Image 1 (cartoon, rainbow, N blue to C red):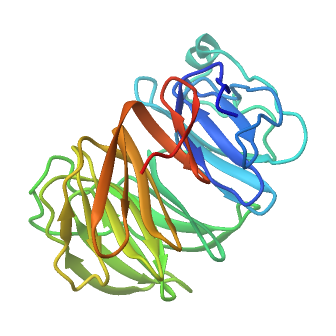
Image 2 (image 1 turned 180 degrees about the vertical axis):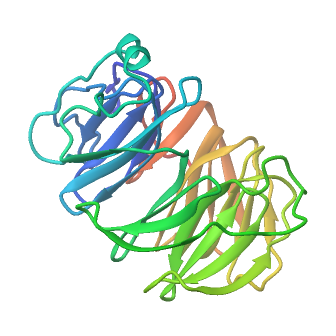
Length: 300
């Protein structure tokens, strides 16, 4: 698979057990297997950037956002069967502020009246937020399981857009709602009820969050560097990296990640980075998908 090259510029991979969704910078979607082999042709179901996506059950649920036209969609596509290209951007302009245009091949779809963010897979469904509106948990069929108010952190101005949410990460039957500033609201996973607020001190804005019961918290900083925590009460352990990190996974060996011109790993005792000539945007097994659409070996 070292000679594999995808025909669009990839942005990330939404991981599943047997099917992974490769997401392109211009709204492309491609289903690939664990070896990076395309399972179908790539398609562009909707003429907007795909802000988030998760694989759940037999579906992929994603969100599309067009800031210029102020249009946002959420939809589920089946993992099995053919997907089709959707309408073009000119049609989106013509039918803006209406529900006529939806992502092609979708099982269900919704037009959202506020920007969706922090779409995250949890044990019993999917959690997401809409900016300054609320936090919602739905199941694979879009049935609402609970909703709660948008977190408030008075006086939080450390970074620009401090109240933008990054992740709604599940841990120990709770949900940690992370803001770009490192503020965290803890909710009960069963009903979304409020438990507590706290601040994790960061040296830069937060870009992403991963959690493993064995590996603890892996915090990705926007401008490069990661922070490791065994517990939310701990002081973050800062690890410098050659550039921003774009994907991280935990395995029996520890955390491994890929990013701007490097791959890295942390075994719990020490961290190591190995330079690469390109930019790693996603990990799939022991391999890396690069920003120029190549399949390469993980180097760290």
